[in-house]
Structures are given as structure tokens and as C-alpha cells.
Length: 199
Image (cartoon, rainbow, N blue to C red; front, side, top):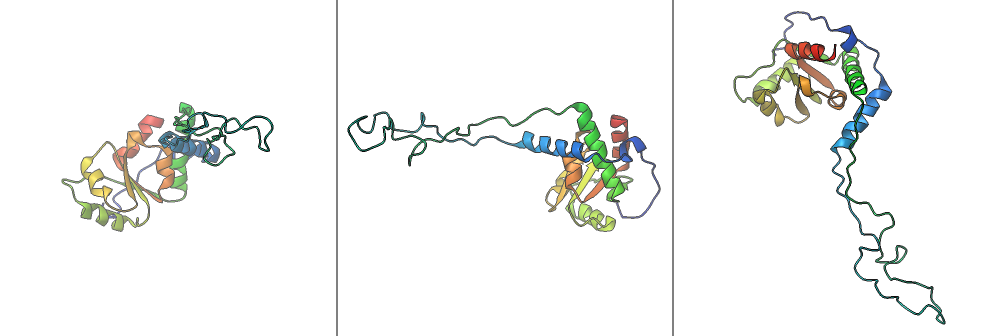
């Protein structure tokens, strides 16, 4: 965490050394964003707009169109054609596609040299200054993702109020999080955990 080189680690080539598959990564990102959508937008159709129950004027012998309601879509104050209604935008992505997407995302970070392995990311108490000092020591000053082997409340809450810094556990990592960050900082044990999960 002090930014000092303490050793070397060999990464699994089948996870961190593949040729990134861009279409699959794109599919994973679109899927993630679609699953996050609330889908609460709503508008009134002509049947739901208040009023318009009476025919506004006679059918014949009057110089007007043969309108049946003042709430028709092409009239001011009328309903909306094919009005959007609350809906669920989420859909499933195949498990193999998800696995390939995250492998491709991790490999792209390694190839672009934005993948930093730290021997241990651990705090004894809530301390944002410690996380800030670690980021400065590692030269990570932009959007950063810190990955721990499991949920660590001390690390997560200490990093929460630093702009541009996100945290994640190794077993809940997704391709969108990996691709979104500029610098990827991961604990050594988290690399081992990811290797066990995806090998």
C-alpha cells in the first residue's frame, strides 16, 4: 500500500492474457445498464386523459372535421400515441458470455498497464487518509476501482467519499465496473479468488 515493489506474481493467461473480445464486452455493458434502468416513465393515452367523452360537434352539415373526441392525439391536450408505461428493461445474458466479457475486461486492463496488484489492502479502522495515501503512492489519480478478496467495510466506507473511487469484492465483480475505471487496483488474495472462479 506504500507503493513499494515487494515481489512478483504470475497471472493466469486464460483469464488475464486473452485477446479482448470487444463485441462481448459491449454486450455485457449494455446488459448491465439495461438491468439498472428503473423504467418508471409514464404518459397518458387518449383513453386515460380526463375529458373527451362527448362528441364535440355534429357529424354532418358543419364545416368541421368529423371528430369524436377532443382528446385525440393530434389535438392540443390530447393523449399520447403508444404512450410509454412503466416496464422492466432487464434481460438475461448467457453465463458464458458474462465470463468471457469479464476475462476480456481484465485482460484489457493488464495489456494497457492499468492493472496494479497490491500484496494486501487492509485497514484497522475507518480512515480515508490511508486510502488517499495509497492512491498517491500507486500513482492512481483518476477513476479508480479497488478490489478486495471479500466485502471489507473498513476499506469500502473509507473509500466511499473520495471522488472517482469505487470498491468491489472479487466475487461480485462485473465487466462494466472493470471497463469504467482508469486504474484497477486489486489485492493479491483477490487475484487468487478470481483465478479460482474463472479458471
